[in-house]
Every structure is written in structure tokens, then in C-alpha cells.
Amino acid sequence: MPYIIKSAVKSIYRDKWINLLSMLAIGSSLLILLITFLLVFNFHIATSRLPELFSLVVYLKDNLSEDETKKIITQLQGRNDVDGVKYLSKADALVEFKKTVKSAGVILEGLDENPLSSYIEIKLKKEYVSRPSVESISAEIKNINGVDEVYFGEKIAETIYFLKKSSQAVSIFLFIIVSIVVIFISHSTVKILFFRKKEEIEILKLLGATNGFIRAPFVLEGGILGVLGGIIAITSTAIIYLLIKYKLGTVIPVFEGIVLPWQIMPLSVLISLILGVIGSLIAVGRIRI
Image (tube, rainbow, N blue to C red; front, side):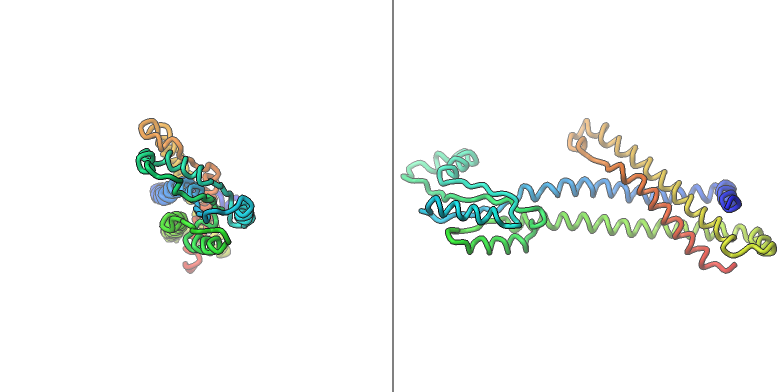
């Protein structure tokens, strides 16, 4: 074991320029992934709040009794997909309308009675804010006795669902691409170093060294390159994050709220270690000793 570690460290130092380029390439690839993750993570936080702004509006039929209205409210509150309900009577609806539309006084002038209907505003649970779910829920609610009409912004629900799924798909796609790039870099580097040590390997074979013993330093070297590349990536990411938050944020306030989950840092190093080892294993596994 000491020989394997010593051999790997010595090889990294002796072929420092090749290894430095490999580390920078790995670090750059992981940096792109981490920056993308930072953007996607904050985009996900922003989009996760969108369902809270979405609501269904259930218009009730006129001349419903108080008991009938309470029965409808209770029925809606008991649904598994409903997070909360808010009832507005005809009078309350008129007040809200006047607050929303500044020219409401002119519009309603001359009318003898309140033309608006009482309604119930429904907040759905986040997992149900998608077009298919909202359409299904709306159809069920419309069949309740006393309900006149159900309004929902189907385009809004569809957009919220699309944004959430798109951000997840982008992050997964980039993770796969960057993983392949890191494995390829580790694979190529170890393969080059392997052939540069051809004579040293021949000597070890003559001394009776096993294939596993010969390959082990190269696998370890790939892992070290991955770790060092990961450290370069997380250091660069942290610097970029701090610059965006505390420098750019003073000019553009929206960047002040940007969040970096620091727990991703050690995980990134672990991932780069695993990818480096995988690339090395593929390289030494395909070379005949």
C-alpha cells in the first residue's frame, strides 16, 4: 500500500504538466456543472413558490342558503388535494373588485344591485399544480351541488409544471454530460501515463508484480486527479458565488437572494473522486499488461 500511494504521488509530480492540464480540464467541467446547478437550484426555489400563487376560483350559484354554502366549503376543505380555502360573499367580492379595478366606481355606477357572485378561492397542494390535475379537480368540483362555475388559468398551471420539469431535466442532462467528460479526461490521462511508464512496468513484471499491483497506482492517480479537479471547481464556484451575491447584488438587488447549498461542495469532491477512479479503471482495464 505505501508503494502504491508513493508511486501515484510521485507520478503526479513527475508528469505535473499533463496532470495539471487534466486537473484544470476536470475542474472546468465540474465548474460548469456547479454553476449550472447553482442557477437551476435557485430557479427551482423560485418556481417552487409559483404553485403558492396559483388558485382555483369556484363561483357559487345565487340564492344559496348559509348552510348550503358552509356545506360546500366543508366539502372542499376535506379534499386531499386542497391546501386551503377562502370564501368571499357577494359583498366581499364587490370590495375586492373595487380594490383591484380603480375605475370600478364608474363601471358599477347606475347599477341597482351587486352583479358579482360569491366565490371560493382554493389553494391546491404543490404536487397537484399541473394542467391534467387541475382540469380533473375542476371537473370534480363543478359537479358539486351549488357550484355554478370553476375558473382556473390552465396556461398558468401548464407553465408552472413545465418550468419545474424543465429545470430538473436540464440538471440531469448536464450531470450526465459532465460525468462523461470527467471520465474521458481521467481515462485519457491515465492511458498516456501508463504508456509513458512502459519500461518501469516491464521491470515490475520481471520482478513478479501482479497485474493488480501494477494497475493500482494508476487507479489511485485518477482518483487524486478527480479530487484535485473537484477542489478547483468548488473553490472557483465559491468565489463566483460570493462575487455575484455581494458585489453584483449591490447593483442588481435580485442577486442578493441567491442561495448556494454548501453541502454540495464535499459531495462534488466525492463525485469527482468516483468519476476519476471510474475513468482510470476503464483505462487500465483495456490495456494489456
